[in-house]
Image: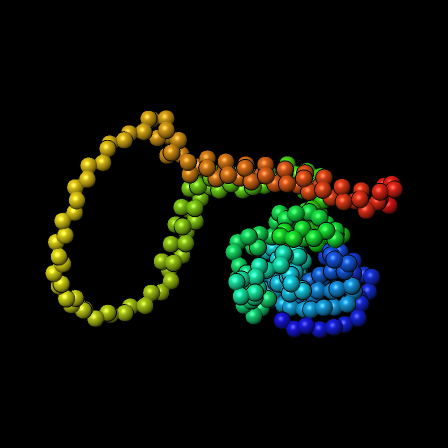
Length: 280
């Protein structure tokens, strides 16, 4: 990653940037596609602070935090980011040094767990606020007119419907499994692979040594014969169908509750910032 300093961008360019007011500074993130790579620029108070390139995900250090930018499949085509957050400070180890949460692969992509790979905006929604939550991700406000802004607007207007995507995805996987779509796809793949030429390699015939193994007596333990009732056997046998849907419903309910709490907290913060009346 290269770090550069430059002048403030134009108002038109600033309108295409993600924005977050944090600790008395305005952070802005601008993305674009150049060839096969995505270019990510971080601005602090209108001045370019750093720039990096990434394929799917980029992380730019900022003080003791990092700015994490993720792209969805459409973003690989037009360069629009799907998610942009300011991550919490990295915890220090016993030696006083910060521990690494992900290694940079040289293209701006971090080798992390799946929690940072989700391009859905499922983080706390203090949009554009300056409150430091300490150990939570602080999301940036997406630029107006972007896919991320439209998705966020839809999620705020219809939180239950937006959260139901988890249930829809889990149900689709179950239905596809019942219909045998995965087996059909596997059969097509095997058929295509059968037409590929296979190298004919004569491997040498190696005589393996016959080693006598010791005969170790095993204890004869009589386990009790436990038989589940028929209804419980049916529930266990079909768990691979209803368990994903049940988990998805729990995730959707949790997301709706979280968004309602975040909206109430956001309204309270706006009321503290404008105690004399409504926000202009």
